[in-house]
Image 1 (cartoon, rainbow, N blue to C red):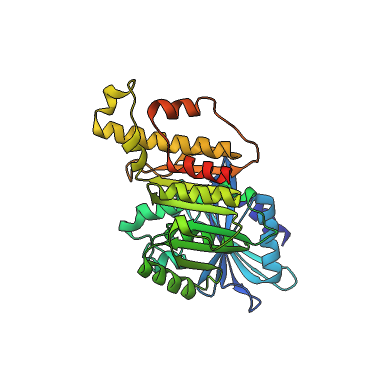
Image 2: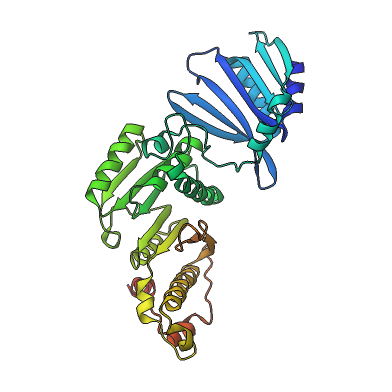
Length: 382
């Protein structure tokens, strides 16, 4: 075993292609565990994918912890390991007493293919392993291949999960979290959130998707039941009138049209949500309002007026959230080539109020007084 651990330690670098741990000793473990490297924020991380009962469970570990974890797996749960690198591979059988019989061979013929594989972007949801909800939603085949026409959707889902990953420290594991997705639609991202938080990261969550379309809600509930997502429910309703909960930890609203975004943000503030993720859409309200002598030479062009109004809307929303004690970032959601509605507002509750001195002056001079401002003022008066 000592020699095998030295081999593992020496192979855990950028040239590692994958490690397959299989031939289980116990009935209550997965069929196999596949380990692959990827880079995250300049650090080499190793993703463990355990295949169990037609599902895949992921966990990420750094090198030292990864080697120790594999030792535990081989001593307690599995008998066999195969290590594949760019230039060679090793296989070993491990006895109950921890004795390893090791074989090695050169694999130079795979060098070009495997190096190309290592240069591919590492997604949170792997593109070569079947993820049940992606298969059911038609993004992947049963074999795990991303369907060509759905590749943009696959990238969008993974990009969104990167934003979720960034706010994990704000979500407390010691309590059951309530998360609401306003305007969930077909719920690609709702299912992705649930899978990432509950299954991949073991968060205790209660998740609600809300949408106006009755048939969409029915189909989403059927799929959640089929997948065994017991803490995910979909409800038919309007954002502005929804009162189904009294406390929410994270509010998500993606492409809610026009002032629906404002109602969602207002409810998030009222609940004191720790995290808000919003990708606004169709900012018509301020396009109707915006005026001003200084900008009139460009506002006379309809397409420019629309874009300036959209940017103003999101900028003012961000300012209002800061005034309510949130730390706010405006981030690119996906590339402009996919959709011009690509700004994500990410707000994290910090309980320190920040008031921009020029906010009111800008609003008055450009005649910009939106729904979110009115809703927050009404709440303050009450």
